Length: 128
Ligand SMILES: [Zn+2]
Image (cartoon, rainbow, N blue to C red; front, side):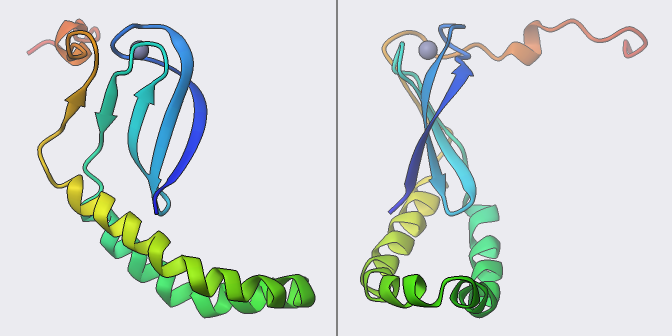
């Protein structure tokens, strides 16, 4: 299952700083959703997600041992729940990463955000 957190960000569509729902696929930001206007920006994370999963899996035994050494009882007691929920969590991440392979998607109540890079004048000395 993907992880959802909240952050105060400036929306590219309504230009207001407000709470955004930030969806993670593992350690990667996969989407932002503005709580003010509902604009959602999905980010293509598949190309980075799958190599990251490999690194996470490779380092998992070391991270498990480190957590066990710090909190042997707490970690041992948390294992049954982790074993039961982790596969579902990773499956949700994989689904999100695969879904992100679709072309960039915009969902919102108003017009899509403008491409601000087009509006920005070239910095001095960069004209060609
Ligand atoms: Zn907004």
